[in-house]
Length: 577
Ligand code: NAD
Image (cartoon, rainbow, N blue to C red):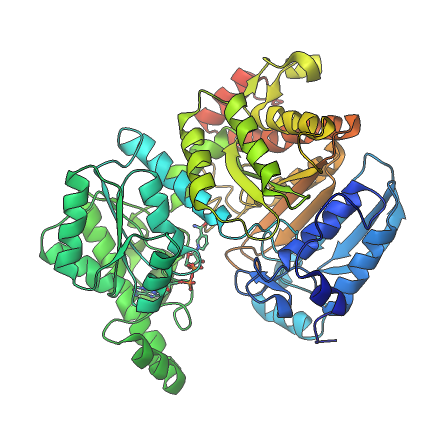
């Protein structure tokens, strides 16, 4: 059926509070997370089951959604539900330590792994595009991208400057759904952001929601304002209504070289995502309708000028990186511009060093629906890691700036790095009796739930973009040291390992972020309900999961990963130092 489910209309998001509809909290967590992904405050087009990212869905159809809820209500504590591309397909007795839900979305066999074949199957209702966190019920709204962008810029600042962006100017483009997080992520790192956006309404929206500080339509004035703020070491952000390619040429003409240049226009889609230069938004929209071919031609022409601008600024000393919108791929494939890849993607440049240490976007949600529960977890993070200034800055700014969408949640980057300061949950000898950062945090939260300081269980999950859980040659595994960009054994081993370690929901998908056939990735959830079983599962999963990131990068020969393995006692057969 195509009409939205009556149940969905009634729920309007996740049920909250301490009374359950399901037979246990592990089942209830899945039940609430699926509904949270389809909360009108969280999802882009919930009436079509679309959560985010083009057509990333949480369930294949409204009938499948109803059936999943029904199965979860009945699911026993020793049963496992199987979900295949958003449809429940089986339920088996397994055992209590096993996952309650296993999910596989959008996966196709190599030679058939194309959008074309996918769309044929999709039209017949046989498959679903799960994106990353849409089909695995782990999406938390815009906080995720804000924190990812904050973290990327923080790593850039650590590598290139004195640890933050104070007095530095970042130039970028695109203030859309994801790109709109850029100005705030820059000012959170104490820098100045100058962002080009052709659509004035988008700039206004970012100013209204506090993501961008000012809109200035005159370029010279915008540059002056940014330079003055940088000179005064004042965090500031300006959205300027101009095409990004024109902005960069304007900067070059004026001989102004920013400290950093990047872009987050939707260049991955030349027709629907990117605007050609020389048109107001309405004129371009009309051209797209009337003459899509000409639109794409002009759009790609502008993109080439745009990349040219980035490369010229890089030549003059700016730090340049691509932020995952495939603008380099577009101009190389469609315009034959071979130099397009002369500036790096953000993962090899800034994220991989963290992946080597098992660090990635770790996140959790309060099943109670009570924001106080998340505030208590914020305190716990700061108590556990008092030495991490950068983490403190993120948590404090997030409390101030991030509005919760759906179930209250928090995201921060934690990794493998072990510490034995909390001797209570010792690991077996061969893992040196120490706990990873992620495990220490999860165990502390489990205790707080047990003590009633947190009112209902917390579910801990993460993005699929994580240290050991993704193969994506144009993004997360671009330019691996040993050429293993396209080897998908790693995310599959990660998913299997998550099951073995006792995660409560485990999923493996194809095509997230970069499209069908371009990525394989996995995800997990652990429900912290205050029980000893939850503590055991958390200690295991939050060791093996970041640990698989350390071994994946050590295997590829990264020094940081080998060092982390040595320091934290991660066993790597055939690689003993
Ligand atoms: P969006 O479509 O919501 O926003 C794009 C914005 O760019 C729009 O506001 C549009 O008006 C503007 N724009 C388009 N062409 C322009 C031009 N030439 N000059 C100035 N402005 C222009 O998209 P989004 O959700 O913000 O995502 C942006 C891009 O970032 C996408 O390509 C997406 O795939 C990519 N992305 C990367 C990551 C990552 O992890 N790095 C995460 C999410 C999205």
